[in-house]
Amino acid sequence: MDEIAVGIDLGGTQVRAALVDERGAILARAEERTDAMAGPDRVLTQMTNLVDRLLAGMDVSTVVGVGVSAPGPLNTEAGVALDIPTLRGFSNYPITAELQKRLAFPVNLENDGIAAAIGEWQFGAARGLSNLLYVTVSTGIGGGATVDGHVLRGRKGMAGHIGHMSVVPNGELCPCGNRGCFEAYGSGTAFTARATMRAAESSDTSLGRNGVAIDSKSVFAAGRDGDVLANQLIDEEAEILGRGFTSLLHIFSPDLIVMGGGLSHEFERLQPVIHAYIRRWAMPAFKDVKVRHAALGQNSGLVGAAALTFLARAGTRVARAGK
Image 1 (cartoon, rainbow, N blue to C red):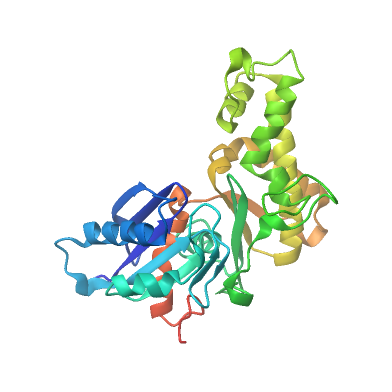
Image 2: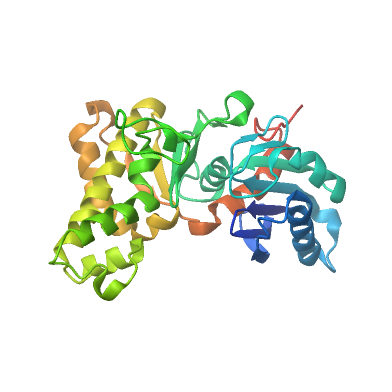
């Protein structure tokens, strides 16, 4: 009988759970809006309720554990949420221990960017590769990496905060408090802010017409309709991403970069400029590294959370296996 893992993807907007088999297939799923301001006890109750709904009427002997993907910063070695800005009360909160009290299965905790990297490495675009860099471009920028066939976790399991490498000295203010971060320029939030400012300065664009709010979807839609400013903004965004990806591939030397997150829905429009930047500016030995769209889409983190349990069970160097 196939073993099954439960994956939980905890976010500030939604909490999702799924039953995932050893081939990475989602067998069942449930989700609800996160009660983000109600505190940890309420949010953990939401998580356990979702698990109970998924397992109702099942033979739970096939369930090998529960993997949890959550936004950081986390100390995954200790199982502690250090300070999750989108979830009230998750400051120095022992999320693994508290969740373990409520569930009858082993619990493994991972940063959402690393969990998504694991999902794509085990079951998605990077399956079969030893060296992967996963980059999520959405409200912010985050990621995770595998190096020589192992998940890169670093001190306290906090590796992969790639959105906070500095790309512009004394540049735009980032939500982290620093200035000039990759996230402050390349995230979906930064892209929308840039589009809003530039549209206000232009009389020759459809963006923001009649007081309609600008978001990333409207910019790409305008670009497809031939709006010159929209296409300039899109090309600038792709170049910013290409610049960041080029720095990252020099650091990590991946076989592949996988792009996920909300902005990756427009990957086909972005990727020609991203690849052109890499071909122009990467060192010769790195120019052939490709960037691909996340094969699991928005399920990368959910499936990756479940994969934590399979990997830990197999003794792989993730999720405190063997400790």
